[in-house]
Length: 213
Ligand code: GAR
Image 1 (cartoon, helix red, strand yellow):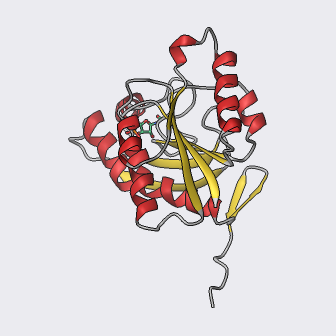
Image 2: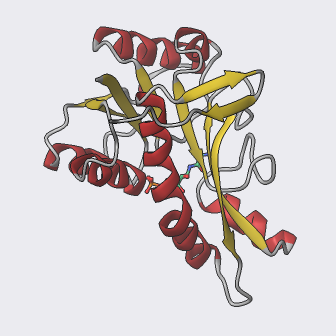
């Protein structure tokens, strides 16, 4: 079982999708060992408690800078023995020490089709505002490994979502979550935990399921 820690900052609908998929047996070989929140008020913490997952708070506001915040997170993840880290609506860019400590072991979900509408400043509703302002006709979500460059690591899964003429940032955000994020993030976690992801440079190959007979 791969010991998996989920990092959150807000409402935690992606966390809920992970919890539900895990309960239904759709995420294989994975133990959810912790939910760590950068925000003590995050509703995601309630979801974790209800599911019986241990919760921890590493409050961004009490750290003077990115490096000390990153160190506290790395220390906590090492203390609890995390083998996979998932950014599920985690709103902070961390110092390079995080990727160094968990290289190719951090999965991020981003609410657009990378490499469009991503990078510093593109998070949450802002992504969907930018998508609508640009007038693109298709958007989506990307599950990828975190690297030193924000939203730039090797792509595991992507799913496209159509944009409608009457979409607002809120309606679009909801559709991208429902139709893409809540599906591909649990699937990417399962693929990792099953040992089916092979990374070459920036390309991820999904290995066939081993024959179960
Ligand atoms: C999600 O749409 C997630 O993809 C996005 O924030 C939202 C959090 O929702 N993350 C980013 O934009 C990170 N770049 P949630 O807390 O309900 O899962």
